[in-house]
Length: 345
Picture 1 (spheres, rainbow, N blue to C red):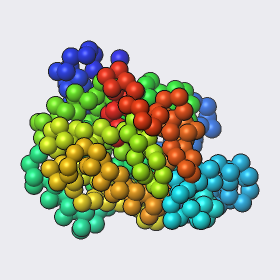
Picture 2: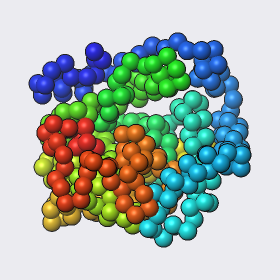
Picture 3: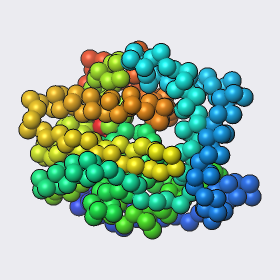
Picture 4: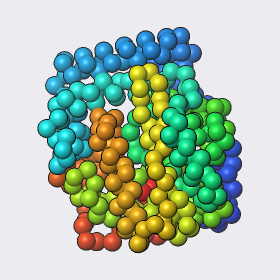
């Protein structure tokens, strides 16, 4: 079993696993073609700016040459910006999306630099840290997500990121497996201030960490049982972030990853103090509004909400719902039995 997976249901064991240093698996074998595509040494020989320019050209070519890729990108953008003020820009954004996907794949295999951070974000980060309480960094699946937390780590901010079970699986002997192993290796060797929390059963672990004034990272854009007005439409979202903040008195700090040319940037939003809101729902809605502004600023950089593990085909221009799982008006399924969904939010 992976050393960062709890060996039992005991809270102390789960906390020990979360605090354990990250141990990367070996890079798995694969075909020669895949090994060449996934060789950090070879990829690193190409300057990142040149690699990004080539990726942008590939993405533009996909838009022109592949009908299936165009349709896939259009469906994703319809789900994201449908019912918003940017709904009329679907085709423009879909083209940008194909370009962005190629760029993000390229950046993943280039050397991982520390993300840049602007002065206003540093000020907001320092303000949140000065409160001397638990912090919940809340981000969405958009932009160069593999890089932005480095802007916190280099400033001594220790984070515990909630991660799904697939991230702890033994790498398969293919492109995906080598990508997973590479991700772990970069985390182990370059991100000494980062730890991972295995998402099943994670709510008690996160609560204990926050009560100890630690800092956790939870993705907001995950499906759940809370009907939320988000991106101009009703979206069934997990609300674990707001609940944990209220239960532990922790501050929520919105965070986003964005790309500027060949560089990754981390942006820190205004902190949300649970004491400033009437209840958990009010806090959750405020967090949704904060993330919505960022998503609509660069909607083409958001991951497809219909991907496996997210809304899985249930996200449309008019609503996001997981068919057969999340229904408006019903409580979240599995409040105690499926903590994976509650750990996100």
